[in-house]
Image 1 (tube, rainbow, N blue to C red):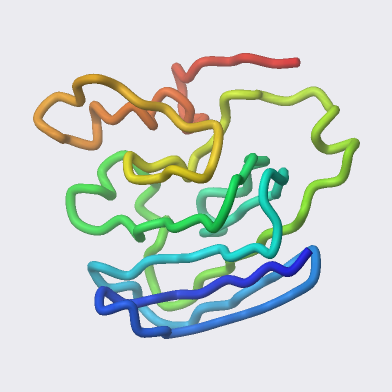
Image 2 (cartoon, helix red, strand yellow):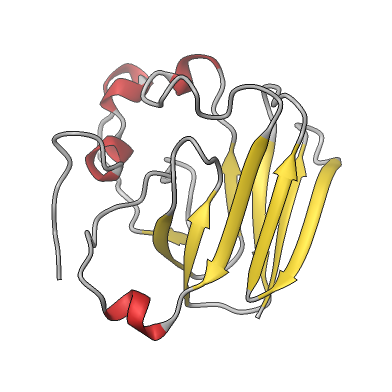
Length: 155
């Protein structure tokens, strides 16, 4: 399975790229600016992947149905994240295709700290019919981000 991380700016210009087979890492040594996005491209669909878009947040076992696009949070969108997340000029991104034992193991089935309202190809994904005033503190993703009070569904 081919995997590729890309960092794009707001004009969709490529700032960094890393490719790998079944696993990919990227050390990004610049400060993120508003509008930057992280893309995980894959040659397959419907796969489980260990995903880490920032080492301050950690990794999540997610199910992806296509390429994943993550908008790097800035401004008010950072309110529900650790202040260390996506901060500074050194960022470690990593993705690895999950093994069967990873998927079958005991885990929180609702955990995805990288969920965003705009995401459509990465699960678990939370949605709500109303998110009060569009503020991140009321975002549906907070229910599955792994920070206190989130739902715990385990297999």
